[in-house]
Length: 423
RNA sequence: GGUCGGUUGGCAGAGUGGUUGAAUGCGCCGGUCUCGAAAACCGGUAAGGGUGAAUGCCCUUCGAGAGUUCGAAUCUCUCACCGACCGCCA
Image 1 (cartoon, rainbow, N blue to C red):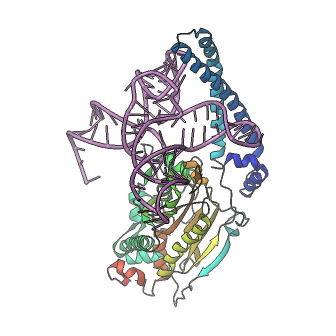
Image 2 (image 1 turned 90 degrees about the horizontal axis):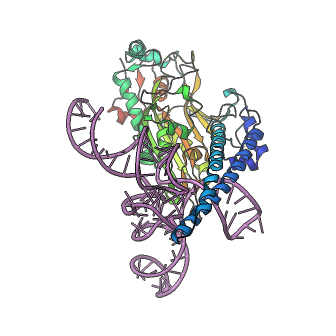
């Protein structure tokens, strides 16, 4: 949610920021609605003030045995006017809220302009792309040959975009998640959380998935939504709370399943387990002061990169351009891992800083030390990493000529000493 | 699914129609004391919003909505959520 007061004071900057998102200028409409609302609000408050004063006088008069009939009549007259003004004020406020709740975040100045992912800017490449003396296969070919990755049975159980893994491949996925969570908690200062994967609409409003992106979500008959990312429960941990500055930054990590309808991605990445309705992800979320968030963004990205380094997976980091940056983000780094089978880099992590955008939506504040009042916190989230895609990356990068898969050294302890997966 | 209880400030927790935006305790801030700290004592301390150049003034908020009343945290109704117990169950 954007700060209406800021829009009021910086209408040109606001329109320019929306233009970067490909949206038409709208400060005029918004501010005229705002002016109407404040006019009504002022009128309403005047009436309420008079009503309150009269009620107090009545109380005094009655207490001293005086006559209050005139005052009682006055208050009765005010009642109708007050109610009408209250109704109008509330309607205008609702209109304003509805308009604000679908506006995307203002991007940082250093986000490059661009229309689509083709305009994202590469920042660095890390790790050497492996050379194979054979034609590297895609993960699903490898998995199928090993007899440990079964899409047909998954389709029988659940339809398209699901997979059944088994044996050492299933174990590898579990090992990856455990490895990631251990690194974040034992070395990077994140607190492990095991959150609900079903949440209420309020939580999704808080992080920005609702009201605009409902079609991407699965919803139960009891009106719970399945989380599309653990960013939702982790960030909402601080919803409607006022934290002490000394508590910040707060860092949370969780290994959860995520659920996405993938509406709108029909035909994209249909082969293999790159894009599934259900997938495991280790998420990182940080809650910071405004001063800390830039540095935390770099730190969080480095935490995600560190996982890839330790797994010996080559990757690159790109900064998303204006056209590719998500609704709630001020700036996003994507980490893309090298997939030899696809001969390309594919997204495996996305680290975003959201400023106070989500904090406003969920009323998450803190008390700055030595100052009165409260301020909104800043929130950041990043994958550390997408577990399913990391599984794919390990399989493809560590594949051998005979179709077996070597286990990266860092994972061997998590695999119970197994160093190789073969049929 | 059934029965009962609850929802108040950063936290705990009083408050059942009248100047209560709300006792008290904790926490936090400032002061006294101290070489310094702790303890003790004194004072301050809800959030959001409107308005104004500003000291300020005003409005809203005691889970949400509706109602009764001149006046509601307090009474009535509806809903949501939380908890306990019973039943069922991983």
